[in-house]
Image (cartoon, rainbow, N blue to C red; front, side, top):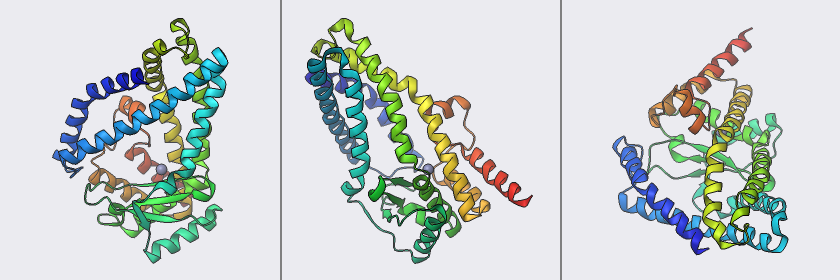
Length: 305
Ligand SMILES: [Zn+2]
């Protein structure tokens, strides 16, 4: 575990100047009002959380490897998928930063969309971020009975209109109706199983995952595996996001608002509406703003026919 933390600590230190430059950049362009002291505290908190999860992961993998030898990889992958599933399930219970949405009109829209999407009642909540940023966002998370939709309070303010807020609401509810979260977990399993096998094979010559000597190599293998699979994971994510947009168009029947929403996002988040293909492949978890506008127009055209 000490070796693991040392490896992670070095990686964190190497990344520090880049994260500091990125934070300077977001402050310079008004994307964040977070002071440097708060930012460092937050960065430390993230590192501490990473230390803890790394220790837990090493405990599981090394424990299983010493117990089962080289056959640890399949039960090992299963344990990680189970942990990811459990975390997704309980995460909404650990949230103490959001409050229930009070906007009666938007709540009524939520109930209507839930009926159209075949969903039971999903709690809609609001998270206050406007003190730290002008960026707007919303997200869906949780499984089954813990499903939720959370709006950043910036999403409920100018420049976003009621129509645009409804599109966001429908998009997030669609993530639940299309079961994107369980599907994401299934995809995680599809990556975790071969990933664990590769880890087992790669660490063989260092004595396998039961030996501490294998830990630094294991960290490298995990990082490289994540890097190599990122374009594929982003492609899957973009497909789900596009589906949620399409569903949102079907229930709101309001392509104009979806289009204006994307323009609003480019204004508040300063996103490049049409980024180069390599950037979209490596970083694009959502379709580009231009692609999303194109879909809204395609939907409008199809309805017109
Ligand atoms: Zn989405």
